Every structure is written in structure tokens, then in C-alpha cells.
Image (cartoon, rainbow, N blue to C red; front, side, top):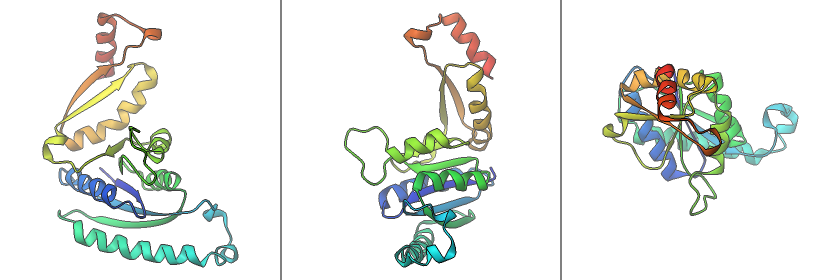
Length: 208
């Protein structure tokens, strides 16, 4: 894999460890680099601001410097495998920064904590993760707890197995090869688009 992009926000410690630990486990299975990202949250359109406009927000520069120091210390503390890790600190809206960084680096995978700041009990995934899932051009792995080696042996691809599904599976193939895992196809049958078993199995076979 070219890149294994792992993103998190400032101050989400448990998610940060879970995602980074999982990234290391995946990276250990092949020739992979990790970009470990920390996002300083702001609603300002930071990239479009002029230098003079940015200078008016000294508090953001202070947060950026603090984020760099904390991220460097975090990587040094938790890095356990002989895997190249790049520290990346950006300013902006978290989900936008994560997706943009992954695009720029041609990442093969985004690893992110399932929950972020402001998580509400009972919600399956956080709102930031939902936005990353909708906009990312590469596979996204949402992590609820640290993964171990056994977690990387099987993968489920759930789909309608139509033409629109093929690009998603194509993007997953480098990851499947990297992990050397078994893939199980799960046909999602719905009342509005119900198909019989024979047709469903035919669609699954055509995806391979």
C-alpha cells in the first residue's frame, strides 16, 4: 500500500490510540507508510485566508504548535513496529481535512475512530465519520477498539452487487491483497429490489 492515512481530532485520546494501534497492525502486514493526522478544528476557510487574515487568529497558531508537539510525543510513545510514520497537522473542518489529505497522498485506506467529540450514546457511528465515509475516495476503516492480528483475517463486502458497486470493490482490492484476508460477499436484499437466490449468487460471482 502507498499510504495508510489515519486521522483524528485534537483531544480524542481513546479514539486516537485505537485507530493508531490498528494502523500499526495493518502496516505490519506489508510495505506500508502511515500518515498520522491531527486536525485543529475551526470553521474558518483557513486555506483561502490571506496571511494577513490568518495573523489575526494567533490562538489558532498556538493550537497548531501544541498539536504538533502532542502528536510527535504520541507517535514516539505508541509506535511499536518498524513502520515509517509521518506526522501531519492541518487546520480546518476535521472531515474535510481528513478526506483532502487522503486524496493528496493517494491513500489506500483511512483509519478513523468510530466516535469523536460530542458522541451521543446509542449512535452507531459519529457524524464526522459519516461525512468521511460519504466523501472519501478510498476505503475507510472505522475502529471502535484496538484490533489484534485475528481481526484482520476476514472481510465482509456488503453490496447490491450491481455496476455501481464495482468501483468500490476495485478500490478495496489493494487492501485485501495487503491484509491477505478472506473476503465474504454479503448480498443485501431489500423489499424494493428483491431478487431470488439464484440471481443473487450470479451477481456475487460476477463481482469477482
